[in-house]
Every structure is written in C-alpha cells, then in structure tokens.
Length: 306
Image 1 (cartoon, rainbow, N blue to C red):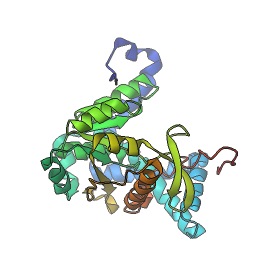
Image 2: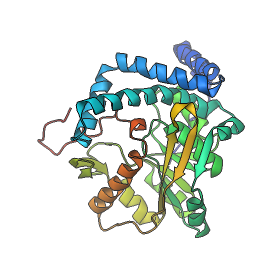
Image 3: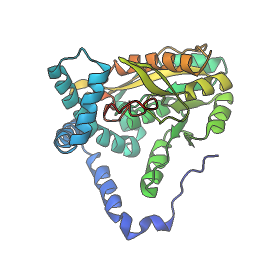
Image 4: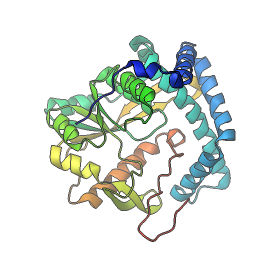
C-alpha cells in the first residue's frame, strides 16, 4: 500500500534550509511573465550543458544507439536543444507546482481529449501512457486540469522533495501511487480511474524483458504494461505534453486509445508498447529525457553500452 508523505516539523531542520531557499527562489522566478521564464529556462539549459558533461555523453550515446543514421552534426544540434529542455524542465516544475489553474489554462492547448471521454463512457479504466518527456511535471498538471487522475511515482529519498512533488502533483489530481504498488494500480484501474504510467525507462533487470526500441534490438523494457493491462482490462491511452517553439506555450495531445492491446506474453506487449513510446517521442524528440541511461541493463555477460 502507498503511504503519501505528510508535513512534519523535522522538515524544518537546518539541513533542509538551503533546499527550502531554492524552492522559494523557484517560486519567485515562475511569477515572471512566461516569455521571460522561457528565455531563462533555455539559458539555464545552455549552462547545464557546459557543466553536466557526463549527462551530455549519455545523451549523445543514446541518440547514437537509437538513430545510427543521424549525422554527428544533427546529434550535436539535438543535444543542444535537449539541454534547453532540461533548463525548461526546471522552470516547468515550478510552473506545475505553483501556477494557478487560470494561468496554466491560458498557456495550454488541449487536442483530442474526446478520446479520454469516449473510453470513460464505456466505464473502463485508463492506463495513461506518459513517457519521460522533460515536460513531465507540467504535462501531469495539464492533464489533471481536464480530468483528475492518479499518478504512479517513485518516492524521493529527500523527504522535502518527496513532500513537494506529491503536493505539486496532487494540485490537480486525485492521488499518487508508489510504482511498486501493483495491487493499488490494478484496483484503481478496475474502479474506472485514470492511472498515469511511464513504461519507457530502464528499471533494471527485475521484471524486464529484452525487446527492440528504436534501433536497439535488445532494450530492457518493463513487463509492467503487460501485467497491468492483462489484470485490469483497462484501455491504454498515450498522451504527449509538447512545448511549443518560441515560448508560445504547450500542447496536450491525446493519442488514439487501444482497448485490445496484444497481451499474448510480456515480450509481445513490451515490443508493442515500445512502438507506441517511439511514436510519442518522435512528436517532440528534443524534449525527451535522453539523459537517462536507457540501455544500462544488458543480458548477462554482455558488456555495457556506456
């Protein structure tokens, strides 16, 4: 069972003062006009690219593995745009947590939300596929403004961040479920809820299968999609929270539901799910979290790709 964090006096201990100060500064910054926030975020991204050399190498390697025909020049441009999204991801976290509903609605455009309503009209739960875009936080907030759901998350080791991310994500959603709480997810889906789920990262060898992802033939991919869809009979609905170019706001794009996904076995479902994830990523590839070591888990005895 998931136990959500609660505020306690221990979170005011001096060891957390620097973090609380940083959160306060983020709150102040996101009160600025959005075009100013956009320029600041991109600028922070450029600085991050200069400082986060290891993450730059990981992003370059991921792009090399996924798109082997992409030229070196194209990869460098993609990495530069990706780090602009890293900086904007920080700003968007503050926007998602601290903006009012009215201000959020002003900067977002919702596309094809009727797909969600059509599934709900059937009385079925929705396994909402939200891949790890750097717009992840603001995407959850935008979706929740239209239909409050339940987020699947990994509790943060820092109790202040854990409290803040839970509070921020629940501003426009019902609740949060620990990603290890499979029974809780299935219960919510069977009750007709919307459960946000990200099947695109490498979560380690446990409960993973090796199937293709872009040009990588044996990418460790979660078998969780197969278990959740098979046991809950929920419809799978992917969505893409895409940042518009030039500081013009955001699009919340709902893709077509799949209420009869292939469920023959974990490998079949994971391979199909990866194709869905690929489609989502290609709608905004520069905004995807390429900094994650997506291909760190390898078959036993096979050397690392990094």
